[in-house]
Length: 203
Image (tube, rainbow, N blue to C red; front, side, top):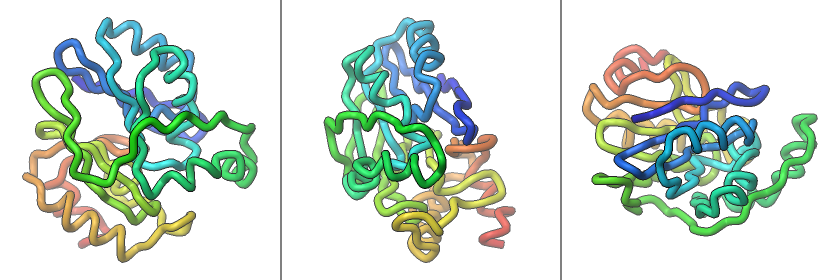
């Protein structure tokens, strides 16, 4: 089960992934009260908060979820500096200050996190940001701002690189089966086959 909650002024997609009685939260951007209510309504045990990257629109509710549920936060290693600069990010975007969450575990890609009767695999997909990670579970992949339906993540922010982003997509996303569902940080979901064939940045 995947539940999508689109939150905040940036309309960022937070995902609740449920397998059995376990729940993972991907990119809790804002609207902590709404996310807490949705998590509690699931009746499952929250196991992880997983960040794809540390831009402000993907992390704003993480500290409140940690406080409410006592669950660990997993952060890509090369995103730590961005997370530490959360007040600066907020200032540059004219946003109110956000509380930086506690970092519990660092990810370098390749980790497998148990969830119910399956695992979530952390896949390193930098380019939109210095150390972005996507999360693959079964035939689904949560790609943050790496790729969107018909577009790709911007590369003009801190540590972005078009060449790195292109390599991440071609190597770690377009290598997956066509039917793999991609859940991006903004906008509708898509599939690997759809983007490989029709994404204008590659065709």
